[in-house]
Amino acid sequence: MEEYSYFDENPKKGWGFILAFAALMLFTLMGFGIDLDEYLQHEYLNIPRWYFFVIFAVDALMAVSLVLMFFYRKIGIFAFPAFLILHFFMHNYYLSTFLYTDVTNLFLFTGFGMLAIIPKWKFFR
Image 1 (cartoon, rainbow, N blue to C red):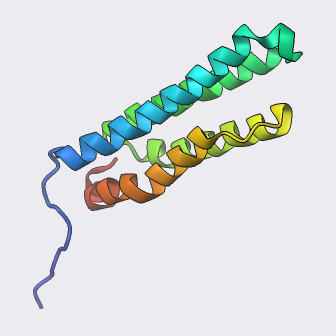
Image 2 (image 1 turned 90 degrees about the vertical axis):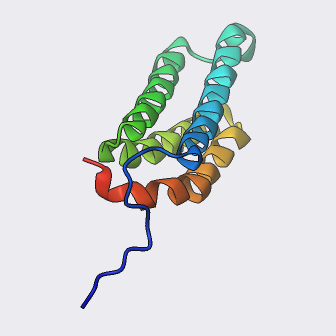
């Protein structure tokens, strides 16, 4: 019996793939900007300094996992949502802030990102 494939057989990154990652990176950088703004106001907001070492590390790991996804590494696909949820819960628990950038980024990852990632899954290592 002939096997049918409904997904793209080409490992080349198309415009949908590139635009999905550009949107994910944009919202990741927006979250970094929010963290930077909070750091600049940390004395006024009474936020401990250790918090920023952790949250900036999480921001950097989110960006690294996006780069890994761009280069077809499976670890990036699993790491990005984990770090994104950690970032969201850290803001929610320590600062009592609900970040819409994180929620939007998670929506983009599960919605548009998966439409671009799932067809390329067999090319990931």
